[in-house]
Length: 488
Image (tube, rainbow, N blue to C red; front, side, top):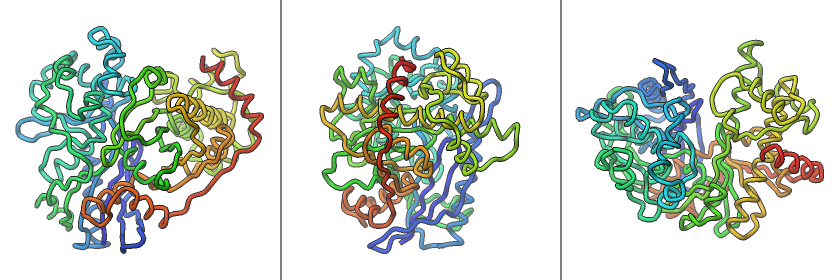
């Protein structure tokens, strides 16, 4: 049985062909492409037409590899972003990128209308300036004519699905990232939408992952040579990744979906919005079968990726293996940063931003690319420890192991550092977690798997997991004390 998954990340995308024989799942990458946002007229956009064209190229590659045997396909993407569609079904411009300047002042403006604590109690979502609620609020304030033309606000994975199947939808895991969903009723919060000046009718009703939207539209079928069912899976890539975490049924553990962003948390049956959750700024996002991903958004490998890009502009292409070697040769704990500081949110001049942060916090700034990379890796590992300790305080019990999935599993320095910083085992793998969760959700929708436990058991039987043990914990404890003072 062959199924097609498209996994769009913030910097690249992949078309993955999955093959399921009833006992094991195999993956084959058939198309890979960069995801290059575009600055135009002072704003940063996602290039949606190009991303859709890459999807069709991947579908054509799937046609050559498997032809009519591709029974279904599905899409997952990053969270919060959306497209605006008019009454004719036309896309009103490219979607804004979540790192755009659009929302610079939107949070404080909205908090003057609705206190933060009330907003958290209603939505259960961590306050990030790029959340959908702030984007729409900013568009309404700055470009109201755009919303006047809008007839549908469609979140990113559902936007792809709309132009694949013709069916508008709002998938639960993505809807939960918007800070516009009632965290308990799991419907759009019409009062919140009214507050920001948006009609709730513009958002399609929320549906659960595993919904079959219909057959591929004829024009796309004719272009690509395949005719699969289009399935709405866990559209948020982290929700798909968490579905692929190979935890045993009933296991007590934290998970970390590690890529451009790091998302660290646990899986719960119901949301938590009490004072401890609010103070720790943990977020309640949706998962498969109505579960809650109670997690923290952490900056992730974005800073290292930016360092690499900046270095290559000046010195030419450098491989990750070479960077890892330079990092390993640099002194441990030379300097530390707070990866979640707003200085590091936007692209460009990342080395200068790190050095400036170190000077402001009374540290010697790192002077080589290896020292910069080591600073980021160690700071990120210590941030994981801080997040896990805050999570344990909220939950009231210890989390004895951390499961890591996603591309960050390939970063051996980070995995070793995380285990040592946490003082507990780190189980890393699988790498292609978002694509795996995507495909398993398709199998669940088609009735080939019975429940989430069976899906995770299939993944555990099909893919290897590497376990890292902690070492030199005393040095990491001392570094953690420094980190807490630097973080403030």
